Amino acid sequence: MMDRLTAMRVFCEVATSGSFSATADKLDMSRAMVTRYVSELEGWLNARLLQRTTRSVTLTDAGEQCLRRSQQMLALMENIEEETRSDDAELRGQLRLTCSTSFAFGHLARVISKFLTLHPLLKIDLHVGDGTVNLVEARIDLAIRISSEPDPLLIARPLAVCDSVLVAAPAYVRQAGLPLHPQDLPGHRCLSHANYGRNTWRFMRRDESVQTDIASHFSANDATVLLQAVLAGSGITLLPTYLMADHLAKGDLQIILPEWTAQPMTIYALFPSRRHLSPAVRALLDFLVEEFADRPW
Image 1 (cartoon, rainbow, N blue to C red):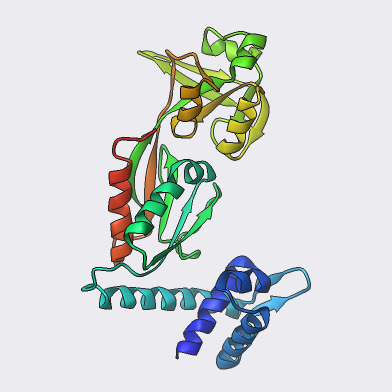
Image 2 (cartoon, rainbow, N blue to C red):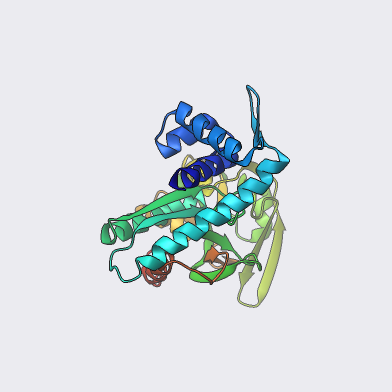
């Protein structure tokens, strides 16, 4: 039975990554062993689960069904392991997280390291990226996302408010001058996030609200890329304060239109269900809430 569970785990990783080599690297086993486990699972089920070519690995219809059932079986085994260890003070097992690159780089990596120091028997696998991930299919325990409207199909626990401000490098300001009003921004070189306000920025000042259409000079789907570009003097961009507070303090960047505020968003921890939430996930959730309560940025 344990061999079959291992084969299911290997198969799920191959199905998710689409690569036998990547699965071998992730699970720290040889590619031949990965192939053997998948072949044995196909033999036990008497069905072909994967279509293999020199360039891709895709699921057959039987493979789609096997993937869903295998994920359910593995999740059940993880729950059993957690529940049978509930009287043990030490947290064990592995958590799978996903988070945007910028927040992982700016703060989450440090907080996770601190959490793992407190729980040395626990392992955390962090998937970094801004793309949409199906938490159930990817077997993600916790997603850290920044949004004004979190997915209504997921349970959302707010961690902190995410404020954003307009910034530019002093060198750019000396060369191009300061905009005096949001409506002046179309005359400047603007850098935008591909997924958030790519062509339109909204600002508020007391009871006044302004929407400004910008011609983006440079767009990227990651805030850390925009940060490096604006530090190089490429123009003006809208960035979360958690990412560039240190640069503001050192004078590498300066706030543009400080009396205007962008619409704040919220940093959420998202998870599929409150049922069978493992002690490790509960502990991490509480830890994140405490760490970000005073917004260290």
